[in-house]
Structure formats: structure tokens, C-alpha cells
Image 1: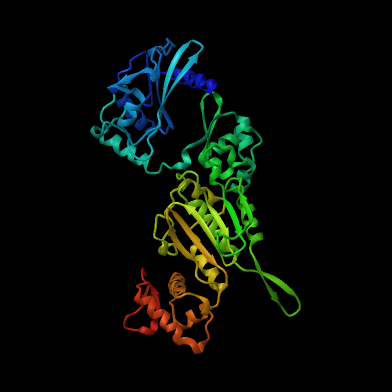
Image 2: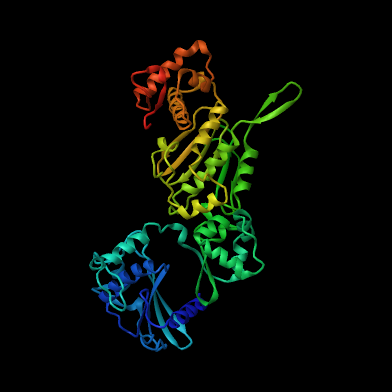
Length: 482
């Protein structure tokens, strides 16, 4: 990266003066002042919408000429500790700052690269600082700056991180499936490179780097990579599909596929692949035999899309997984959901990945108004499947879609869950749960209405449903949150 480092130094030297996110030094290496400036520059970079802030030694402050640096970060110590270690102990939240020694054609330069604040203002020795001109006052003394910084921090997310830095225009076009981007977003493909790059940058898939090169952002790579393994930290985030020859993970694996494409350009293919693996039931009509899907296509599509969008992308080494057993499908994504699973059906979805979710909605890959969970549950009712199970599994979110089982084969918990989900669906469409509607949902004959009454009473006892009108028991039931 020597070429990039020299280009970075030259780009920063072209600045007309120091900015709130760049500071030039000749050879001043006061450790405490350095810690204060790490805090101030990191916070100021976030305010300036920069990914990185910089301190440079060996550069004249006034002319920006390279004068050469004697500073050797790896050899410096403070209070009997290596300088970098001493600084890292006092910076909170932890910031992955890095010293780089660069042999510039005009002399040696040391660059300290400081990532912009992400989750909270960066502090040195429990105090946050900010840059105002060339001064570095306490952030707490400037409430306007403090408020503006928190506003910037709130929407900052993983999507804005860098997946690959300092790549050429040719490399961007080699790594990113830009034709799919234009096809899915319905923008006409520009007839020149400048138009392509302007559009990709506008949607924050890429960002300009130094020396006329580009950074591919996480959002661009995760959605439109031609091969996710080409990005060091993203290969394990591809969708993995595993098929077992039985009902247990101890059974033999008959098919396995680790995805390579990004989530957007690979979505249609992964859904087709999953659908092709799912078992089908044979139906004999009046004249012909035909195969019917065991699971609703819309349920598979919505659940996979939700797993992609709502996962915690900051968890390393993990991605969405679809496991197909003979009696069920389990779809798992890393991260605990931001709302309780029981409320997936009615509450508006909350996503950690707003930019990703917004773009996938624009491309019609996922629901615009909701999470699609109501469609999943409705499809399960139409197919008369056991109710889907939405649960927290350790640090993951898991949805289980079960193959057909008769009412007699359902567990007590499944019957009660079906009752709650049916009440929720009815309420969302302006209706009420009744003994009759639940009998129809569960495929129970009219003469067995007493069985359904027991399920309704048990669901009410568990606080999942309630009478819509306490003075009129025949008025029907609604979910507990109605």
C-alpha cells in the first residue's frame, strides 16, 4: 500500500489549511497532546462525514512541505509503556488507530490514521474533545457540537464501513456487479464510466479515495459483490444452505451451498435454489397428477429477505443460514432482534441496517410497509401448516417453518401459538378470532368445537388473546396488544 500512502500524503498536503479532521506536525510528540487530538480528530471526522482523521509528522504546518520526520512510533515509550499501548489504554471506546511510516519521495512522513467515531464520542482519559479551528476544547463545553455529533452517530452503521480501500476504477467494475444494480433499481445504465460511478457513489455503495481511486463500502459489497470471498471480512456473511437427510443435524448432509454473490444480485438465485431443494407433495386431480409445493414460496422469500436485512452485520464470522430438514426449515441470522419475536407480526420492523433495508425495498426484494411476517403466517394458514416459530436462539434470531402435520400431531404449544397468530391476523384485517374461524384454520370438524374452545381458553389464560368485548363473549377474541 506504499503507493496509496504516498497518494494520501499528497492529497492531504493539497488542503489549503488544516481541517477539523487533519493536523500537521513537524516533530512534536507529546503523548498527552496526542491522546487529546486522537479524541478530537475522531469526533470531528464523524461530524465532517469522513471515515478517517489524520495526524501527520514531517510536514510543515504553514507550507505543507515535506520536511522529514524523526518520530519513530514503535520506539517511543511513555510511563514505561510502549506509546501505542499507553494511548490505546486511555482511548474509549476503543479506536483502531494506526501509525504508518511512509518513505515519501521528498522525505520520511509518519501518518497516524484515526477512524471516525462510530457508536459514541471518543474520549481520552474519560474526556471527549472536539476540533474548532486549530483548538481542541472539551466537547462538553460546546453543546451545539455535542448535539450535532450525537445526531451523526445515531444513524451511523456497519453499511458505511470500508470493505476494500484504494481500488482502481477497473477493480470496482470487476468486483461489483454494477449491471445488476442498475437493473434492480430501474435506473438506465449510463453510457460512460463517470455516470456509473456517480450513481454508485450516490447510493453510498462506493466512496472516493485518494489519488483518483475508490473505496468499496460494505453496503456495496454485501449487496452487489460478484464474489463475497474477494472481500476479506465478508466471505462468511454469504448465505449458506444446508440440506439434511433426516430431522437432525446428526443426519447426513445431502446438499450444501455457500453463496458467493451479494444479497441483491444473488437473491433470485438463492430463492430458486432453495425452492428446487424443497420436497413436493403429489396431488391427483381429475385427469392428471401434479406436484404441489410443501412450503409456500412467499414464506420462503419473505423469511430469507428478513434474515438478510435484520441480521447484526457487526458479528464477524457469521451469516444467514437456511437449514432444510425432512420435517421443517430453519432460517437463522446472527443477532438478537430489536423487538420481541411475539410482536413480529404487528410492530413495524426495526432494522440495524437502515441503508441496506431501504435499498432492498427500492429493489422490491422485501416489503415496503412491514416485515412480511403477516404474509408468512397467512401463507402457513392457507397451507394448513403448523404455526411458524419465531424465537431467539442464543445470539441469533431463528424462524422455523414446519412441514404439514395434522391437528392431532401438533403439540399443545403449537396449538396455542396458532391460536395467537390467527387472532393477530384476524385483527390486522379488521376481524376477530372465533371458534369457527379457528376450526377452519386448524382443519377441525364442526363436531369437535369443544377442542377448539379449550385451545382458546388456554391462550387467554396465557395472556396471548383477550375478549374483544368483555361484556359480549360471542364478539370474538383479539390479540393481547390490541
